[in-house]
Length: 405
Length: 109
Image (cartoon, rainbow over the protein chains, first blue to last red):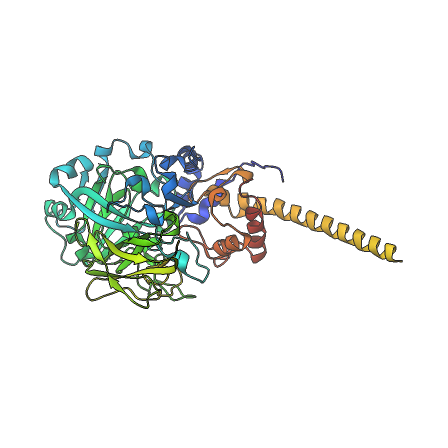
């Protein structure tokens, strides 16, 4: 079959747009966004797309140019996941420097408050300053363990990272706006990365509502692990909703609104709903709070030969919206468990803790598992079956088989 | 007699292969048409073989483990901003099979 570079009638993108006006934008955008998009998404020299060619290819599993996972052993041996190893999951194309413009001039509007205001990033920097560690985890992390055929990237453990964010506490921004409206029930964050595409915002805008109280620990972040927030991770400004799944940490943030109702866009209303297999709809729970979870990072098949004798079994454990309290490790597939020791600094309840169990293993085949608890909740043995493969925290699937020689 | 039967079987086999090949060629042609026009997959996806440069969804040449079955599934039910071409009756079942055949046989080429 010869290559056919026939001209496209991109007005046909109208099926993605909702109104005549937007259809017009899409038609206009038929030249612009695709040119822009193509400019930063051709294949890089290291087999990574150009927009993230600064990342460590060896640390990453490429499911597609927009779904890139961190190897189990590369999520960060020193607690924080280095930016070059952090996974990529984009619902919209990453905005370019040209589209973003001068970073300090980036605007975010605050609504549903006593005095609605629009701030530039430069102005936000004067309102407050804080640093916080929190986990970024895709709702579908662990989808690759589900046995029914689930659409989407087949993440195992690596759509997760522990990140040090710097920005302004949302509380400080709210104070500058005179406080939240009394009737607000949700905090709704909107990204603007759909705008250059010209697509219908109802279908393409990443807008996520979470319970209002999330504002208490939330922040608007402009730095990630000590560097300006990379465009690929939502720069120049991103909402951080600690303890909540990645999708709620809205990238390229343009608006925060305190609302009486949940957003009606597709990414809130129908996507990211945890429904039984074969069913879907907005009546099912949204991907909000992350559950308690842990997994082994070493030894694994990725970390080379495991010799008989003293072995350090290392992993990470997270408590979700609560502090993780304990982790147990099994080397016999869950028949018996030993308490592991937390190591390294405690960076707060929204960060993960590293753990280690020192043990002695003779030659043979082992199934190594970890089981974390945050007090009221502990990891279940099995996954919670659901249509889209979300929120998997079962310990059995996350275990590793290791041969000791 | 045995030789005659053998030659007949051989002839039949060659003819049916040619027929399949023609059928596949027709599906590829029709699939490209659907990809570029009716479904406008090209507006959102890169696929080198089709010369498309869309960048809303993943570059299809980079998708790990892509098969005709996986494309049929995702085109039928949609994902994220991608419409459910089957459920929403944007494409017929036959068109979905054809465009999925085209994509599965075009990636990386």
